[in-house]
Image (cartoon, rainbow, N blue to C red):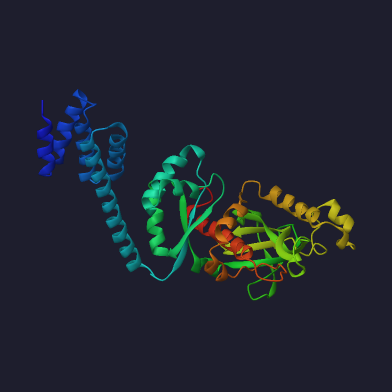
Length: 375
């Protein structure tokens, strides 16, 4: 039977096949021996099986009290981190050399099931060199999180590294999102034999566009807050301090984007700008209100249109967790101010919620182009 010294000697000269053979025999005969398990971790490390090495070192740190074993395992963990950083820096340099190093992008974290959050948090913490607790807070059970912005080539390296772990993420090019053809729909002129919409392009030029329902691969829906400056009075304060103004949410503007990837078009519907008094009647309630639309509620008209979409697009994917995404995006002030939203909402002052929806829809578009609907 080989000795542990035989395995160590084989490791030191780079004879990994012999080291593996010796360690397998030793592990079968004394599986609880911490030094056998330590050198198995070293073998993983030397053969570039870094994830398996990390797991083995973590088990040693968890199950042992020997100061020497703990010290050696910690040193091993540090070597793994150094190797990963070197590999990442090399990959980033190569990616930037092969593409435009100035092209900006975003890295989006997708929802993580509760049962995978602990493991995913460890991977996220390792990749971005943050504490596991803080990484866990970044993982959402539902919806997407805008996690990072920066050079697209660099973010794509992080995306590839995360893809090998339990963390679901994707990148999107801000340059490509800015080029998207977003056509704002004034109204649907007809539904048969195929839908025809009257819409406006990015230069606000009106035109007609027809399509087949099968061309719509996904929908993006969300409610954008509409704010008012609320006034409150505090009679306990001096006169000049009695009146306070602060923005409050008055209502939500409903949005729905239809993505037609093969046509390169996003059809954008907005309940505040859609002309319900023209074109197709979507519901009996809307029919009854023709001629007196001011008395009709937007919600009834909007829901009638959405029901038609649901009927014709029953097999499509709907991205509807805009609120969760926007809450993580609106604080990226420089990014929000650089995005043209193409949304017709009358506001007293600009709001980051408008470009956040454009980014959400654009990210969904880019995700589909790279992965497909369910990729």
